Amino acid sequence: EQTVIKAGGGVTGGAYALRENVVPAGFRRVPMHIHRAADEAFYVLDGVLSVQVGARRLEAAAGAFVVIGRGAVHALANLGERPVRWLTVISPASQAEWVEAEDDLLAAGAAEPAALEAIHRRYGLEIVGPPPAW
Image 1 (cartoon, rainbow, N blue to C red):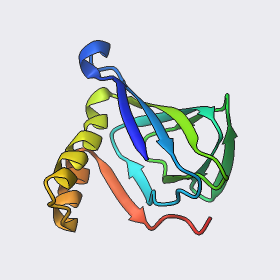
Image 2 (cartoon, rainbow, N blue to C red; image 1 turned 60 degrees about the vertical axis):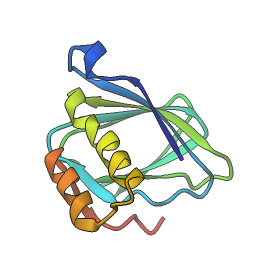
Image 3 (cartoon, rainbow, N blue to C red; image 1 turned 135 degrees about the vertical axis):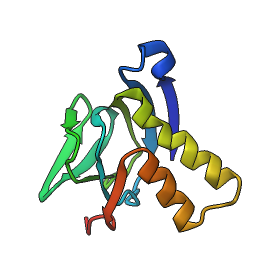
Image 4 (cartoon, one colour; image 1 turned 60 degrees about the horizontal axis):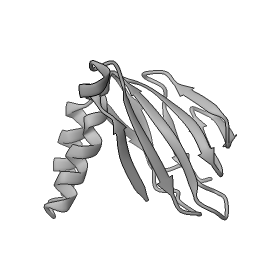
């Protein structure tokens, strides 16, 4: 799995951040979660991204644009047989910084649940359940 920051708050005046994401076939690790202080949107470039929003599941193929408003419970997966590549837009940009904070923590070898939860809390990200039973 790969996430590349294409535009951060420094170049967008803090309005939004843009990331490019790639996940392999069978990727199902994203838990059900909520962004309390951010809106999120996905534009699928290649493959089919499965998006669970509340009780509804969407199969977003290349060219699809999916908007997740703040406070909506959601998760992502790749149920297909090839990688999925998409762009994620998060607004405001400051709410996207949890990705870097989490990566730094994991790189330091300190992946304790309490430390991860503190990062999530700082950025208004709430884990509300395990990944869906896709």
